[in-house]
Length: 527
Figure 1 (tube, rainbow, N blue to C red):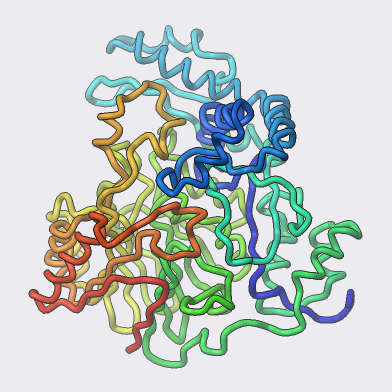
Figure 2: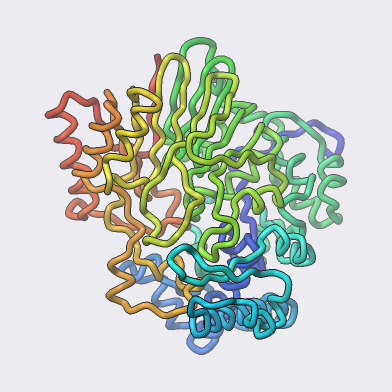
């Protein structure tokens, strides 16, 4: 079959890894990756090796779902030990850098008292030399600013951390991505290649254009055994859905979580792509339902469920550009998505609030995103206003309604929304759940629990819709889809506060003549 034309099978999945941990923005961007490696992943592996069974039991306890436990059977503990040793040996520079960050932050806190910062430079850790700047803000608070573009360049050699695993979707929930590294498996094709490798683009292009096993072998630089495994991921037939394009009007499809596909006959947009590959499960749109070419991918923010390389790498080569919000450039909690994604081989457009991006079907305007990031100074977050086929669509993601006046300003600038999509995860995880590794000064449990990854409650969502004047309002599923548990690790029941708030918001919509809906799995709007 080496010279026969083949397509990639519908159910192929990719797990992009860094040092065998599933990648997300904070393990891809170099400064944050060093911090997570040193202060989360290494201690996590050490903890597992002390008591593997404790981790395994906790991983299988529904009450502890989403906790930081390594879900690897005890029989493979020596492989985990070898991984830990390799990290300590091969990533020593990153670990020293992370220790230097903690040192530098302590140095500034203790010594930057409003006077000249010049004397502090010689005291900075050697690992940070030439890679940071010390500065005051206008409230006389000092901070360390990390020269992120330079650090990306300086750490090119750490691309060797990257690898990918290819396999077929089984429908069985995979281990939680933030805590469990991926070890080799007989049914998984291991590729020690970086995320921007051109062979990955050639591979996933085979979803829509046939190619040969020989061509893919050459593109991916495979040996005989790898080539034999890859053959099992190929098919004689194209699995793409026949209705993936439209010929007139406009269409929006909900693919689950915060992922929407907005289409006109001229073009298409995808928001926060996180898409199932399980085409046999039913009741959902999958990668088979994507249009062949996507003009723009809109990323709202950098959390692991919104910038999902598992999906995005499968789309590379079919996307005109990724649109991302601009970061603050140098803030420890606010890595640049643009730099990280360009390093993965994507064309990226970086936007500030009210920047406009034209596309074949209309225009996109970046709009402000409020809250949801535990009150950290994170600026790389954006909602979007999409004009398409005579409709004005507000893509609200997890932006909060804590200050309704913001949305009044958006309406004053852009007019009335026809359709609004909003997030209502209104009792999210605490500060330390996602940001612990970046906190160079400890916070109390009480403080952490007061600062949550929360979107709007019913009242706040109603305020957003009122201010935007939207005729239709839809609430994203909040990790409720069964197929994304490996990323979300959420569990809801009918008495859950978030679901009660959504029900209350639906009543508000009905009372105020707003067409409303609580989304789940899939939905379509046509006009």
